[in-house]
Amino acid sequence: MNTRDLSPTARTRLGRARDRGRLDRKDLYDVLDAGMICHLGLVLDGSPMVVPTGYGRDGDTLYVHGSTGAQSLRSAATGEICVTVTHLDGIVLARSIFHHSVNYRSAMIYTVPRPVVDPDEKLIALRAISERLAPGQWDVVRRPNRRELSATAVLALSLDEASVKMRQAPPSDDEEDYELDVWAGVLPVRQEFGDPVPDPRLRAGIALPEHIRYRADHIPPR
Ligand SMILES: Cc1cc2nc3c(=O)[nH]c(=O)nc-3n(C[C@H](O)[C@H](O)[C@H](O)COP(=O)(O)OP(=O)(O)OC[C@H]3O[C@@H](n4cnc5c(N)ncnc54)[C@H](O)[C@@H]3O)c2cc1C
Image (tube, rainbow, N blue to C red; front, side, top):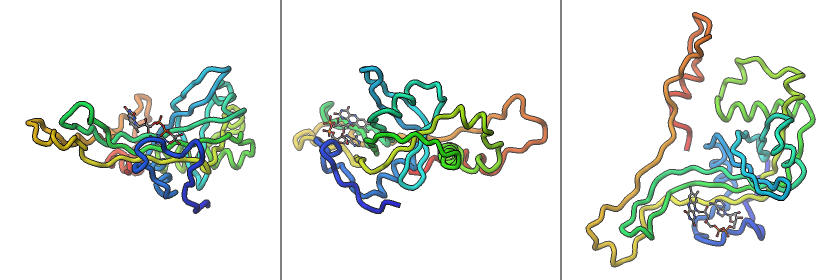
């Protein structure tokens, strides 16, 4: 496990609002572990493409997966990519429109993906991706068979070159605007799960498993 803090490179050094940057590697893991999707940015045939997709983390490796037919994954396997994970935590309502902002936690990762071919590592990756969305599910469902595994492309992304940025603060207005008769503050934004909806084809007598009930009753970790 890489315990080194994040050391900014020429491209991960924050340009603006540097005080919002975090160099503690744990902050990177916390942002990743609180998310369920990432955005995978790549250049495909000379055009930029940003693809929302699931991911999982195992130690210092982030995994993404998809169909072997997915052109984004095929292209990502051949060059540099940039992945982001973003959490919107609040709308920051200031006294002037200029100072409106958002509270957030976000991470950006630059890397050259490594295609995963080893079946054992593929399973580790798929488990990590599955557990990100539905912890506990891997242990109760049918695992991928050989045909399904070979139809699934998996990329391993190193977390060596990454940046983290966070804003968690009230509005920051111009001093003279604090006299204005305008409400100011933060409107928190939260992601939550709803009540589980059984599959119409669910066989009678199959109860909602505890790990899904637990997930449904808890907002995703912050
Ligand atoms: C939900 C959300 C909404 C936002 N809305 C706005 C907006 O409307 N306008 C605006 O100007 N900015 C917004 N930001 C901030 C924005 O993400 C950039 O941080 C900011 O625009 C600075 O960009 P820059 O082009 O100067 O990049 P630079 O700061 O020069 O980027 C250099 C490097 O810093 C790192 N970096 C930059 N931004 C981030 C980040 N957010 N997270 C992690 N690493 C980062 C990357 O490694 C990047 O390569 C928002 C952020 C979030 C999460």
